[in-house]
Length: 185
Image 1 (tube, rainbow, N blue to C red):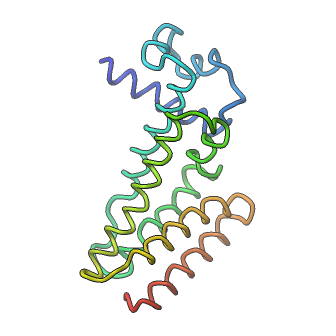
Image 2: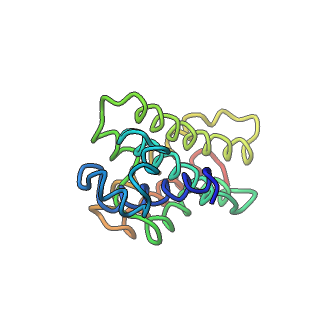
């Protein structure tokens, strides 16, 4: 197994562990055991707990954006695709809130974690901007992109306490109404 493959495998296990158990619960030894590597190998790829969290978040970022790919190429379906895929994610992958915001809440003073979180959220906001530009070229859709991004974020958090179905239906209903109000069909 190449070093890159090993690092990827460890990052996958770190992401899963942090998603399921949070960031404070397990110690480095438990993380090492779950990754099924030696402590030396773990620290070679991720030399600190902060680096482990950053690695897990970077892995989640890549996984989530791959999850968002595809969908309808035109119309409202193209714009709503990230929300539809988030609904699927919450049902099939994880419904534990936003891993990025959970990490930031646990480590608010970490510049490295903060940078990964900001980058992920900026890319996600840009995803809505890009999709709106495709279906409404030449129009100022900046406010609408912000609205859709906030619905995405709210859907993630509300699903934990309101239930996935209710939160997802409400967010998609609000998104459709916002698009219709801007005459995007």
